[in-house]
Image 1 (cartoon, rainbow, N blue to C red):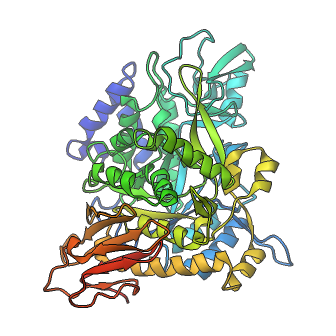
Image 2: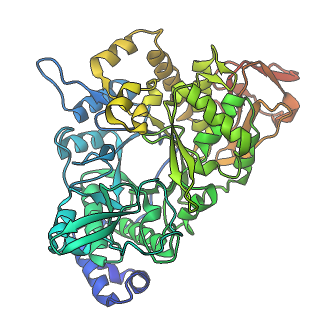
Image 3: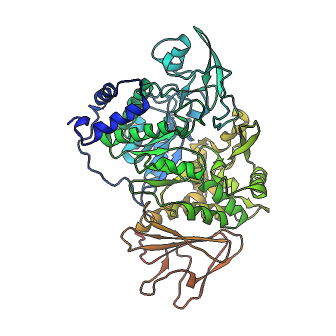
Length: 585
């Protein structure tokens, strides 16, 4: 069967190409796509479940763990596999490997060669070895390439095909409407064999935006995408995809053409590797982020970017108000879609997704508190030339060392509470490796790289880490041990399926945050309760709908519900998962 024989598909592909490339013959582009896909077509197009409550990921660089000493040093990807097998087998289901390709800057996000593994990390065989045991997420850095890439070197030499792969703009062009994620110049001057050109560079001079208005660029990335899938990659993350398409006199973000490219990629994956999950990375205000679900035909998952800043603010203030407001505004993900929940990542804690909720003195107090805890603050340029904070760069474990009143004795418990909230929410949870390991701020790395984000990109010496994990009283051992317990309980509960029902609860105490989850078959309910404050807080049992015909208990074993109990007391930063169907084995 050819792709044009699948009912309606030929017409949909034709419509994509008519809109994206009006100056090209759509039938020719459909035929070209068919040739690219013919060796990749799936044997069956049967739709199988893409995730369940046991789908839990870890985010890491390929070299976050290094073991290069001794007689038999390992490549970083081999060290990572060793850690995964020894510490996280049966705990997490997958691993997001941040860009593992040859690169020139931005810790991997300025890709020199998409089709090779960085030899300092390992080989494609190492990637495939990880994929045999854990589901792998890989980045398709789709908006830009390295200035050292073959394509851009061809541009500088004005040679095919690279000479047509980039966007050049006269320097006097009015670009005031363009949304900027950085304070660096939007246009960068380069000298080619045919003179000077001003090239579009959204993120930095070394990260050159590619021109998707040229269909050859689209086909290059389709080929790269299919290659990743052939190597066993199960999740594809579209990095910075919101900036993909450029059009004069627009904001050049979230354009219709960008959404159409994502829809086309989703169609291609459904035909070739239907178990592959597409996730978009768009660190923008919540309403804009939600648009990448489309009508259930774009991203399978979107990052829950509002969660990290709102959760951090709630825990340092001891109040749930903004979290509840946000939760109540969030629509349930459509069938075939899910939220991707995280509290920390290789980037900082984005502040744009909290716009409209955290404002004025409260916003300033958040920034001041984080700076007191060692954070760096990154800024972006606004159209009027002013700068605004867009990101807090800090280790999450250090970010939760205290409250707006300063450091205190509750760092571990506060941090554990943050992770328990994240893993109980509707969606798929993802833990940054430095959250699992309670890694502190790495100020030495910031000094060495002169990049703020390096503060949360520590590279552990594996032997040193093993020493920390062997000490039961260390932060690293305590956090990994407690999170492992929580995750292993969480992954058994059908009410924690990514698409199970979620309802936000209201309580009189501002320190109490809670929501109700119910399994899709309605058999299991879990009341997820959290004390965000540094003092004990009570919850009236009458405020929970604990059906009298069921037996209720705390999955975590900390809260005892005796018959006739009037209230539940939660210690500072305590979590309770109260259920009618406890699944513990």
